Figure 1: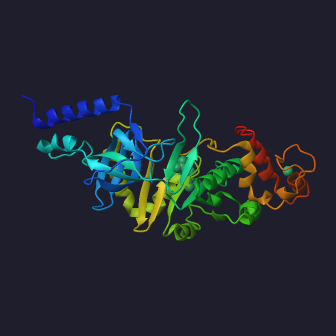
Figure 2: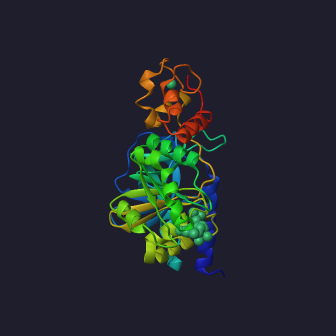
Amino acid sequence: MKKYSEKNSEKRAAVRKSRSASKRTLIKESGIIPKDALRGLVLASIGKFIIVRSEESQKIFECYMGGTLITPNKKSSLVVVGDEVHFIIDKHQNESTVFDETISESGYETGIIIAVEERKNSLARKVPGKSKREHIIAANADYLLLIMSAFQPRYNRKLIDRFLVAAELGGLNFALCINKIDLVHKDDMDILKEDFIPYWELGIKTFFVSVDKEINLNNVEEFLKGNRVILAGPSGVGKSSIVNYLLGDSIQTVNEISERTQKGQHTTSSVRMFDLDDSTQIIDTPGVREFAISGLDKEELALYYHEFDRYFPDCKYPQCSHIHEPHCAVLEAVENGEIDIQRYESYINLFNTLEDGF
Ligand code: GDP
Ligand code: ZN
């Protein structure tokens, strides 16, 4: 005869299988949330599991989506890190495991997400493919902190500008962190900093740090305090090293949580929120190679290049794209050196990737 635990494990596997088979979640824009539902914050999205912390008890639940979901975000990713959700405890799943005392395979109680609150802001990107839904990386944060490195790999200003547009479009404040400055000769530090003057002029905070040599990390910690900050950037820039540094001793707990949840899951694409203290959280996101803007038409792009603001009222044509039109005040400012040429080039580059909304 099979032991109870084995039987339960088979049962759980069957339940999970049937869940992954039911791909369809029906969306309702409004509805009644049951009184016994709990409120929680989405901390991680790992494979098909959504890790939620109950607002009331601070307990962690391993959740999944049920048959219906009440959400005002029906045109974008349904549940993302940072979302405020309502969930009910999955009694069926939890009862089936009473014999071996584990609650789900990872040891967390299981919940079913039934509703998502409206997002205050979000970081979205366009993913190639058929999906009509906008891909949201994370939601409800105060800042996007973009991490790049001085060398190995060298920062990419075009990519910085894409993230900068995406941040404003999503309603997020933006800051920059340039890591690995230990690789910059001290005589070249000023040259490096010069490259970031256009951002400084736009009022963007830029940190020049080295995790290896622990340079200026206290400034980053100071900046993070009291905020919820999304950390994004290409791979290899030292983002994991920064996250590990910031988490310090608590990295142990984090590893434990992820090991328990990630069994048999692909982990590389996970987004996770970590607490640095009661009022400070960071959201780690997977390294990106490229980044495409979602939800912006060509003719709107200039509104996100704020150094153009004072010039474009003087363009001859009101619908000026600032690319080929005669008597374009923006182009003249570029030619006079009043607008940074690299920023202008990134504008053209980005303009060409966007869809025509005219
Ligand atoms: P991630 O891909 O952005 O998460 O980057 P990692 O944290 O995995 O770091 C990528 C590589 O850069 C590793 O070999 C790190 O040791 C190295 N690295 C990280 N921070 C620094 C730094 O401040 N200076 C130097 N020289 N190397 C660093
Ligand atoms: Zn113009």
